[in-house]
Structure formats: structure tokens, C-alpha cells
Length: 311
Image (cartoon, rainbow, N blue to C red):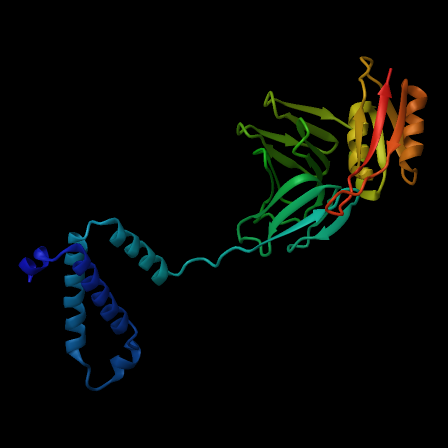
């Protein structure tokens, strides 16, 4: 038997091994408890099973081709039972909108304009993990057995057990910002540095320098967007324009830039874009005009443009 096996080609050995595997599965389906109580137990099947196992091991020793190895691994996964495939859901807040959403564990998240959140429809037993692109405010249900992770596309992660915090991770921004309102958060930077925040603290991670700075901040000014407000606290004009673009779904373009840095302290809720720009123009030397959206060949419309002249 051994001599015949050694003379067989790999394809024949593989087919023989498959046939023996089928024999094993057939015999392993026997109800052993019922067989134990039978008066006449078929001993030959047990002996044959041992022989089949022995033959299969010898075939496996001869088959050193990748196809067989792959088959054995797949067979192991099949018999041991693989985990059920994880299903994901994705929610997006369109530009110019803010949405509130409840996650499978009861946690609540607000998504700022132009934000996408991806999460499993059923959280794992040992953790709760979501992927964020944009800005979101989280109210996380406490669960000491399952930490909650917010992962950004730049490799920064925030993990908590139950707290209230804000993460600003727009892809076109130069930084990623984490602000804590209540509880405690742990921020893991892309270079694997772990930084702990307490209430009222902000962590700014610079994407270019890969450095982090922790500061005390006015938390309300950072999270008021979820209530439909625009709150600026010593905010530079360039950042204000970015937030206005997302809030009103417009493009703001500069014809020129002023060397002087203007900073503002103001709160807006129901004001129109024109009213806000007029307010800004009272302090900064600037003029602005609106270019209305235009219909394109494919029947879509361009964004409304705000042309700003600083002087």
C-alpha cells in the first residue's frame, strides 16, 4: 500500500484524500449515544474509521502542494465553525445638515454636516467600534466590559467606557480635535501615544507634524453645532469660513488674503449667511459677493459661491 501511494501523482493523491475525508464525515455523523445502547454494535465501522484516519495521515504527509494545504485549512474552518460575518451600516449627514442617531447599544451620536459614520449592526462581545469621517458628538452608554472605540481614517482612535465627547476629524482639515464634556477619554495617536483627557480639555493632533497639544477650552463653543448654533470664541476668520461652508453648503473663495489675522467672538443661530458675512465685514476689511449655483450639463447644480475680497 505504501509503495503504491508513493507512485501516485499529486492529483490522484488529492482525490484519494477527498474520498477518505468523505468517509470520515459519514462515520462522524453516527449517533454515538444511540449506538452505545444498541445490543449489536458494528465493531467493523470503528476499526474501519481507525484505518481511514491512518491512511489519511499518510496521504497528507505525501501531499506537499499548496492546494492541499488550502483545502485542509478550509476544512478545519468548516468543521470548527467560522464566526458569522460582521455586517456594517453607514449613515451620512449631508452638507448643510445635522442628524441625531441611536446606535445598537443605545448610545446616541450627532453627525455634523458632511460626516459619515460606519458601525457594525451588532457590536462585538468585547468592544464597540465605529469609524468616523467628519465631526460627531457622542453620548456613550456605560459598559465597563466593552470599551467604545472611535477610529479615524488618519489612524487616531478614541476609546471610552461611557462618557460625552466630541471628535472633529474632517479629512481636509490639518488637525484632528477631541473635546471632552463629561467622564474620561483615552486618545491613541497614530504614533501609538496614549493621552488621557478630563472634562473641559481639548486634544489637537497635527497631521503634518504628528504632534499633540492638550488645552483647556470652552466646551460649549465646540459642541453647540449639534443644537444648530454657530459659536465662535476667539476664532480666526479662516476657521469661521470653513464652518460656514459646511453649515450652509457653500464654497467660500478668497480673491486675496490679508496678512492680519482677525478673530471673532459671536454666537449665531437663526441668522442667514448674508447676515453673518455682514457682521464679519464690520470688523475685518472685507467685501463679499454671492455667485448663485449653476445648472450643469448633467442637470446637477454647482454649489453657491461666496467670493471674498480681503484688503
